[in-house]
Length: 101
Image (cartoon, rainbow, N blue to C red; front, side, top):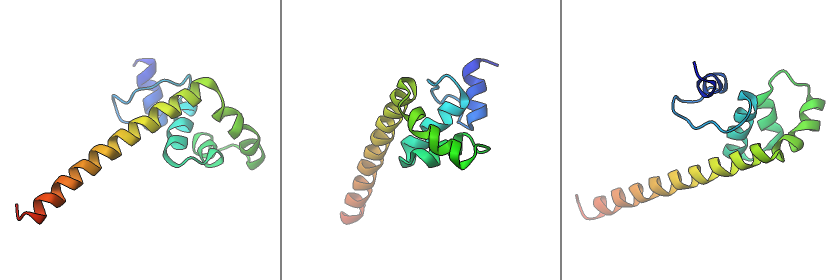
C-alpha cells in the first residue's frame, strides 16, 4: 500500500482523493476545516482523543501550518468548483422544466 493510500484510508477519504498533507490527521483536519471552517471542530475531528485544552491550544497553530493552509485552500477551491457545476446543472434542470422538457 502506498503512503497516499495509507493516508486516504486513515483519513477516511475516497480512493483517488488527492493527499497533500504530511499525516492522515493533518489531512482530516484540512478536509474538515475546508468543509465547515471551524478550526476547533476540525481539530477534534482529526484528533478525537485530544483534550479540550489541547484542541484549543493547537487548532489555530495547525490551521496556520503552511502545508495545511495550502491544502485547505486547494480543497475550498475544489468545493467551490463542484458547487458551481452543481448549480449549473440545477439551472439547466429548472430551465428544462420551465420549457416542458
